[in-house]
Length: 275
Image (cartoon, rainbow, N blue to C red; front, side, top):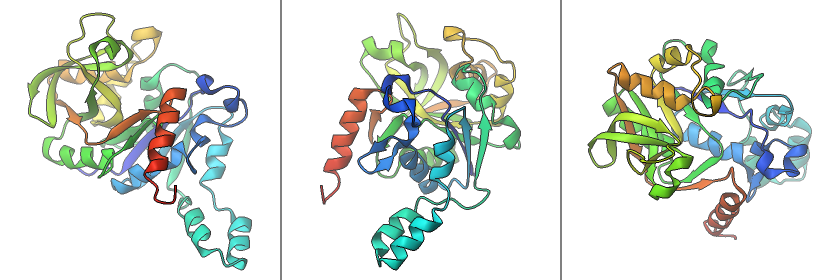
């Protein structure tokens, strides 16, 4: 039950952060002194992920450049004896072949973005990390999930309790069995307009069984006319396969919103001794 690959859907336009995202990808925007994508990569590395699949779109070239080696900058820092900054810089480098990029040509939903990476998988479980959801936790959220997945198998989603009136903004679990940190789902509903099955919202971390990709192959349209990952996971339950939710230990920030981004900036800043 090893999970060594992770998909990062980063094709969005980031319209909620215009005009900043007119010229830079939202994932490159800095939270304190690191771009959002670096937090996601660091979390994946801590969980044992070895291969990183980015689902991108036009105008995302800065993402590829960010993880490349900056030879001139490294040389300049080395000559200046700034070894501390050199270490910080080298921590952002990725080995050749560790990252793969695939294009999502049409914005058809999260499920479609994940489906775009299908040819880079070989009948194996895969993690999915949404960079908008930055989670401050120890151990990191995905590591908690993979440790739980070793025991449960199946498909697993990160989940947290939200006020009932806010469930309409999330995928929501219908709980069949509550085992404390782990719950077994009997169903999932994407953005319920009324009568949500619970207040357990699905947050942007997933471990998907190989059969979820088979479900996505149907390219079935769901809420908003998009291909929803939630629907493909719900199909797992309908077909008798296990889906679990993990109540992760940590604080989640919605950095896809300006308010969440500001909250995360304060929280991560206060967590740094020098700040």
